Length: 262
Image (tube, rainbow, N blue to C red; front, side, top):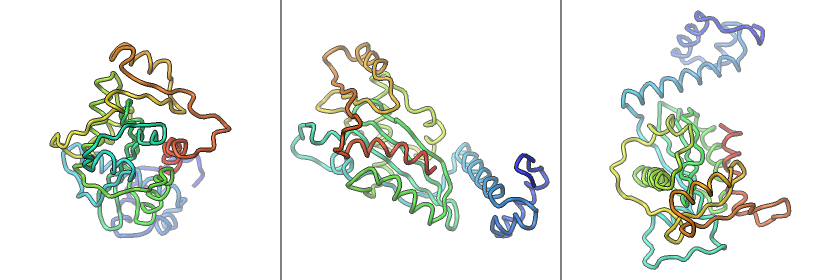
């Protein structure tokens, strides 16, 4: 089969039937005279469509585990008896990466990730739902959290929901909507009770830090309009090629790393 020849409906049906008999993509490809990559791509496409269809009916797979970068968990999910004044030294607390994993079937995990700006913009990026086997899943976790020196920490589904929805609600109050793909990954969170509600922002008000894909002027103008001059802080052009500090820059790179992997 040539690269530009489309897969026929009959071939797609045969792939489905052979897959139900537990044949591997390579075995199916040999039987049908297809490339293994084509078979694998079709199987993944069908799995994602089934996941979305189940979500539309309100049916979700059971949760296996949830994660967030440990720095975020320590600050937002643990009780701090004394308020911590934010400084330049802990500026990396503004980003959180939440991962929610559900089990679709044996050795198949459905994963969604949510990159949060908890100080201002809410959901900056989201990935999934994607189905991965156990090896791919471990690689994804290692890759996704390599931008966070403290690594991931396990949290409950309720805590994961609270982080994401609290960030969405806070950003909405400021005039910012979630990333456009959030409508596709939102169902994966499940129904949230509304508790616990987590206070977002930095030192009691929004703090915008420009990212590599932002339009800082537009964002700052929205903040001026909705919260008023002097009621928010911001930092633009934070990094240049000579910056070697690493911590916050690496955290920003997580967004790109996830896109490359998923």
